[in-house]
Image 1 (cartoon, rainbow, N blue to C red):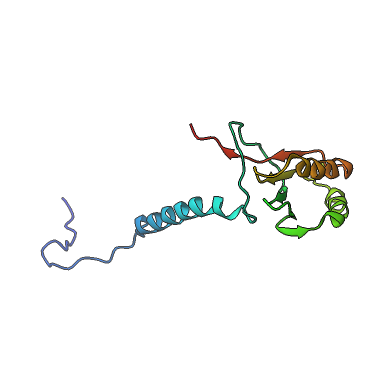
Image 2: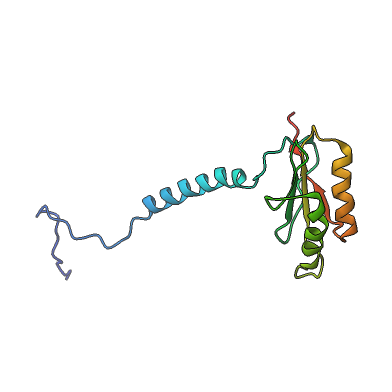
Length: 145
């Protein structure tokens, strides 16, 4: 005694599909992910600096570091804002007063043009040390093999 259920097989009409097709959504999300992965490294450098090359590994970071750049003319930039030599000490003291969640001053990323004289970079590093900012990382380009 089987029960006969009505079938749509012979009528040519289909019942509406209630499932969501997620394949187009996944395709769009993967394209957006690739776009963000390509554009994110391009957004970090604000001041054009010709960095030297190094084979060192990248550092881990907990909080957003302060970017200090010295261009080929010797102009100093703190977070992409130009700072003259007289105001540099005051600006670095303000940066040193901002403590992170761990109670330490922020990490400093120092980028200097490779054609720049050694003395200018050392003067900026001396000001960093005097302000108590001793977590300084010198940024370089990755060496090509």
